[in-house]
Image 1 (cartoon, one colour):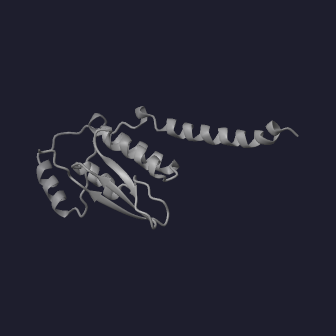
Image 2: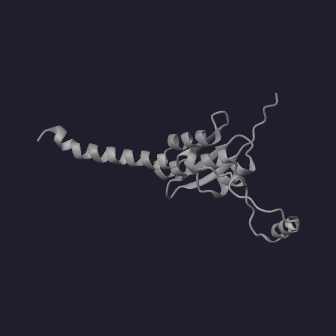
Image 3: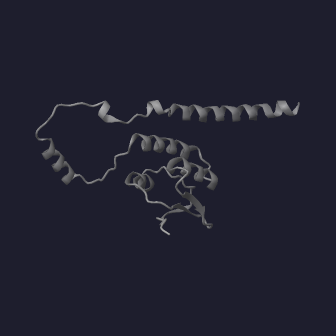
Length: 157
């Protein structure tokens, strides 16, 4: 039996896995992730709307943050990437560059001893802070303690 015949099932399995990941990411196409609800919902004017909104805001027990379409798209793609990452430092840093841009310093550090830190060296918007705190989009390896460090740097000379 030749080496090619021995390797063929393994290569085919790898190709199927690669294609299924590509198909999954393709299913998150940007055309299917539109979130602008004002384009989809219309209603009649209600003179009591302000009173109802005030009552709702006083009695709700959660605080939510509205995400723009662009941030929401990046969040969904980030969640998809976190599902297939190997949680290595280079992979997570690549994801952070995707989410927060190349011009802002966001990176992960391996602190050793099953500890890692996400470092953000810029002022975060309320939407970005909500993504970091509660979205679950930032991956962490199992059994590793993860901390988040917010460092706002001053560019004044």
